[in-house]
Image (cartoon, rainbow, N blue to C red; front, side):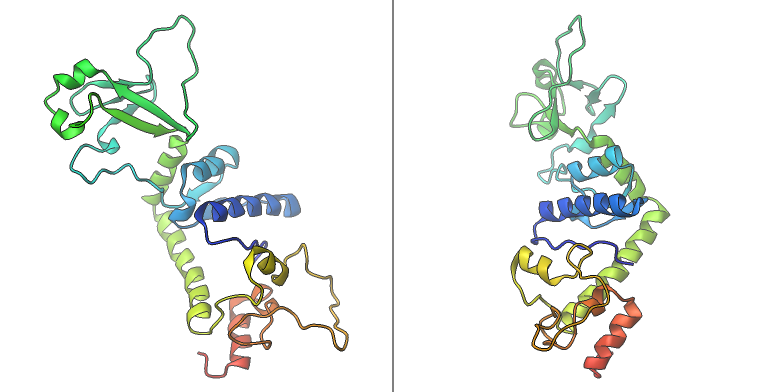
Length: 259
């Protein structure tokens, strides 16, 4: 059942923001929210995962968007162990990486940069005498590790990915994506008649701009918005307000060769 639709530009941050807006709209209109969100890596940013877990309490069945893995043969962040109690990392050689080495009489808030990352640094004295320096930080005086402020939500998403529930969600997501891919590639429903996000919003009959039934059209009035590829014969209402079986039955009505 489709409960909300929002057209966006094909940009990863824009699509993630649209998903957040739709979740809030559905909760305001119907008083319910999903128990989990299923999506691809485009929705796996730290900001989106933090919003889902920390603010909306929604389980993220989403792969984590992570670029911390190094490809030059040096140690990656996964090789360092994080201690939640002391808020510090421990390198494979046993040295610690901390946000600050100074001891304050009053604990201070951890300094977070504008990009939402916390920087943990090792001591230069430890790195100079370490036997793993060539494998850890050969071009730097001391090793530095970055940690997101939403790393707990990212760890939760990584743990969910190892469960059977994630495999089930992945298979369900493939079924939905295969349906739309079939409509796009083989049926010809590639684009709307109106271009741009505003044109798509005007063409898609959402709850906000859809007229209330009964829907009647006077002689000479323009037809309902349609998808390009089938001309003016297949309105969008047949796709958005019907089940999968009804969608394919409608398509077969206009294209008897489509199976």
